[in-house]
Image 1: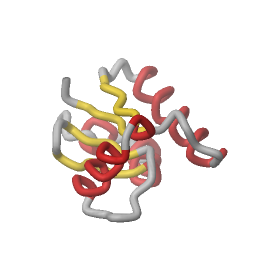
Image 2 (image 1 turned 90 degrees about the vertical axis):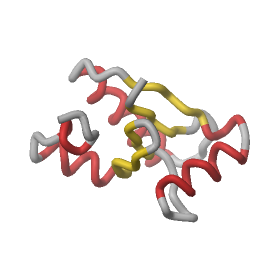
Image 3 (image 1 turned 30 degrees about the vertical axis):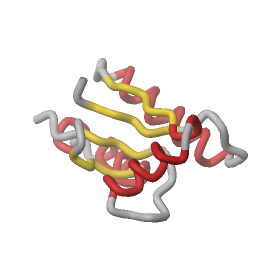
Length: 92
């Protein structure tokens, strides 16, 4: 599987919850297959996400194509607006 979406099932942040839901909705509407990686199951997954993203303070949702960092929610939203989601996800 190529696209990985790092997300969390445990958060008090409404912003994180709504951003995660929006990313999933858009990926599904475009029939893009993805794998969910829940960082709430262990700190090592959160650390892995932050390490791969190159940002020690990164919060979900974060998108990757295999191990290649694609971006965070804001970058994804910009790609949706510009209709460049495939390029953003390194699928094109």
